[in-house]
Length: 453
Image (cartoon, rainbow, N blue to C red):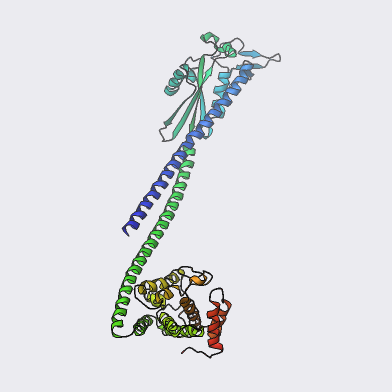
């Protein structure tokens, strides 16, 4: 039993480790989701900004009506910055850098997303880089293509920051040529920041959900292991009880027969054991006696010698001796037997054989007891023997046993009557039961007027 307990504990430990490992990996993957999602957002934002900057650069910028919200760019040093149309309207040039700043100012900053245009060589001091942007711009000049970091705000929110470089193109020199840039130089960069609060809240909810799911699966697994453990313990106890009971039964029966044989004849010894067994099962009191008598009469009807018929009678007297191992509460149960209970009943032929096999008889009594539930088609037990592999003594007792059992009352059903019993052996003639034995039994009841005492 210690091995069963240790195996169950080991299985529980392995189950816990397996689910813990899978849960850890799933949580790690979920925790990466907000960062991965934020990076995709940042790249998409910068890509869109670069696209409209490229479009504006193709035209050298766009002219708009100046206003308080969009005043002329004071840092744009070009004579074409401010113009007057032929109808007298004033326009000011919005170059790509100024346009980018205004877009970030007017349209971004919602849902925790924003961006910043910056450079190490500033025209507009409002674009001054912070410490991380300054470090990233230096990295771009050394060949880096992107920079990321995660910062925590004073309110405790985590911010994902992403930055990409901007390079000088030929059309950029119109505004930045006086800064000694060359085509391909790093002009600056566009940085973004994305507040992870909402994404992390969603992730936390997902983590809680998956933890509860894993916990439920873990508990179900442990419950299954516990049920298996308890069932294994019960089966082990039952097996030990059977072994112990069988050993005691064999010793007692053999000793009893030996002692009785010294003071009386063999039939009286077997009769005493039969009586002892029937005291454990009052519902089947007389069953073995009636089976023995009918079996002997069938043997004589078949033309067997009186000596062989007498041996069959003795085998009938103890054909259920193996039920001494069966728990009394199963033998006397007043309802339908469960599968497990019936499996205990089915052990009695083998148990009876084990008790009798070492006792010297002039007849195959132990073999008849072992085989009395075998059937011609191999559907019987315990060995599934077929046809003539079943000894004649067992074939005779099996018919007598069925007829008597069906005719008599049992704890789980009322007696079915003799007619039903005879109809049963007739319908199974040649299938379960020896045809000659069935015919001899039918003649006894229908022609010779045989009746059970």
